[in-house]
Image 1 (tube, rainbow, N blue to C red):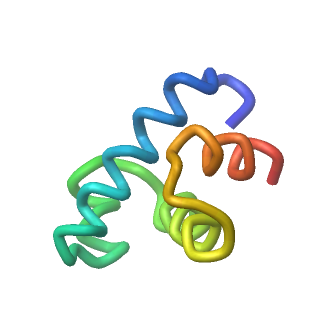
Image 2 (tube, rainbow, N blue to C red; image 1 turned 90 degrees about the horizontal axis):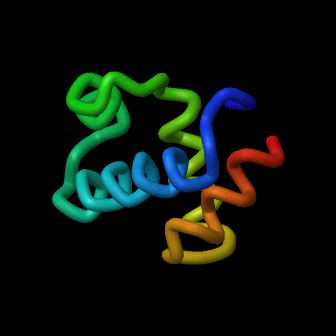
Length: 64
């Protein structure tokens, strides 16, 4: 995660949220975006717990 910028993480989160809103599972999102399932799960937990704003979620995910 340290090698990714806040902007990169925010873009990934926006994509994850878009797929999730379309009803895709974590596994489907992982395969489509070539991201780790644990990373996607963290994004979705942060979304449920705190916010729908991708930038806010990015800050939380990067702090993990």
